[in-house]
Length: 343
Image 1 (cartoon, rainbow, N blue to C red):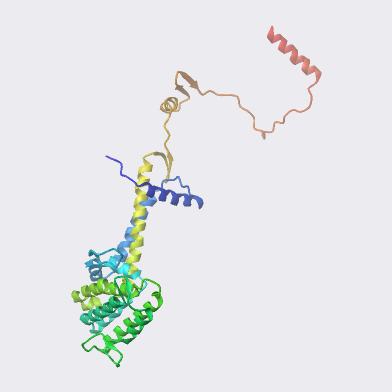
Image 2: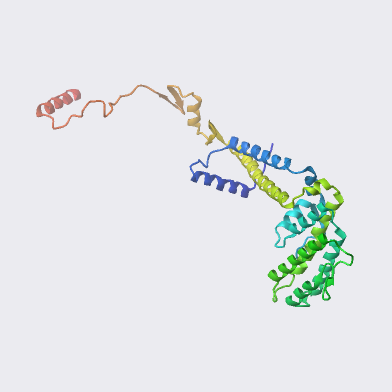
């Protein structure tokens, strides 16, 4: 069975994490196989708990495949992705697309959702964006654009206004469109520059047309009043972000388990969760180990015996060391004894 490949970058990241553990008093060379497995199980339970608290219909909505055209330079082809991917991407944009969608959902809860009127509004804004800049050339200044945006009115309430919607709208729908128009004007005023690329309105228009409208079409097609009545996109996004964080930590924990399992094969000596790296024995060392560490061991061609040796007294055993010079008598006596041994 072949050893699974572990990318070096992943191993380096794990080594750094273990080094940090060593800095706070834990042994970075220790293999924590049991702890890693527990971390995987704990993280999986957390993910399951969050998903269990999400409405099953909301999960169906989030997992619905949506075909759209990404708003990015050089991208012209449609892509198909789950709605949750598009929703999270919109949430990271400067313009408050999620708030716009939630405002429309509140209209749906009241029974005033009218997607064709919203599409007409977006179409009018896109036409204005195309007139603002065409083929890379600026056709009007930022001030002229803001003036045109100020002339737009959902119902044509004054002589200077240009009605966005030809058909009559309810007060609730009119309020929704006016709030959206105010958001667009504020966004253009802040982020568009007289000397810039002047793509601000065009980008907002494309996100509304290519991503917001298709998602609202999915919601309308679901025709589920009970689900719409309790739908909160911001809470749903918060849950998705938490699941995303946990899934990332789950991958890290699974990597630790894999690396620990491989590392454990190269280690011996079990002391709880700590393992000592293996080192190959020399022939002599292996012979000593094989001998069972008896009192007499054979190492190579030699035999070693463990016999009793000279015992030394402890410095605190009560026997004091003799100090001072020996007497001449003792010196002569010892000298005679040495001479007699030589003979």
